[in-house]
Length: 390
Image (cartoon, rainbow, N blue to C red):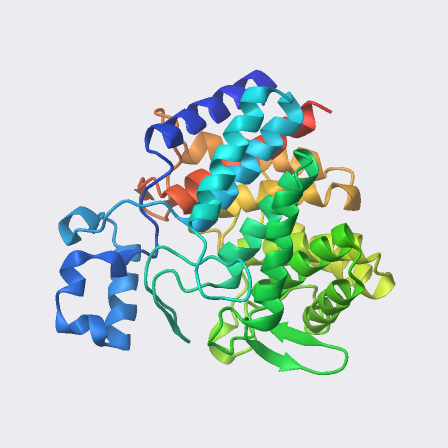
């Protein structure tokens, strides 16, 4: 894949996203339906879960019929900011800096109010199997990606205000975010302020934030908390190197992008806290399992360890970013990232520049989800372009 082709793909995708004001639909936004909200079923947990899955899994897009508005998403904006930061590192122009600051300022304007520190939620009510999170309820996933963007902005733009935002996020994590388990040596941070989930990638995202801010500000108590959270996840790695999604029986699947999230965050905690063999060995075993289990020879990013379908742009993009982040673990990581990018561009990209949601066994879902597919692919492409400028 030639760099000029990659740049064209990036520029066309960025233009498409900007033309849509970085707003769109999301796989999980069904509860924003004005039609569903007007029914008595909107108060039912079972109905909310069923409606979310129906709209998400339908071969046809039901959102226009159900009056689901297109909106901006905090995690999506964080990913767009991370993409722009990668481009700014490569370009170092006033325009690239201004574009980055504009997105970061918009992300700041979406902060949740009433918490100990800065935090973000999703722009829709979300009913999971375990808990219900009303619209804009802070959760660790969008909050941690925002923290990643502000930490990188503080470094790359040499701006202390962004580091202050990242430090504030640590207050949210330590004071407001629930803890599902805690001992002297371990801690598991939950998904939200009022749930007790034990989801490994979510807890490690909290650890990544604490470690990154701790090392940037010289606060050992933050890095100590990050190490405890990392130890909780490392100690629950399976014998083959894999991690389940979560600790409960209903969370016992293994998928590509949640494994990638674990590897990415664990690597950043290890680097920040200078952790030794206990953690390095787990990272290497996890990486070896992930690389061998989730990719076909042509670069197809499998969704599950035991099933290639659906082929998902989100899985492809997160794989590209993770291969690049862990490039020092194996000599061919950059080549693998390029192979996944080439497959995803060939099989999931529309000629208008955006990326499809999923290639399923008998058909392709061509819906251009803004956060799930476009923001992630823009981030991945920007990171790939950055490697070519070194």
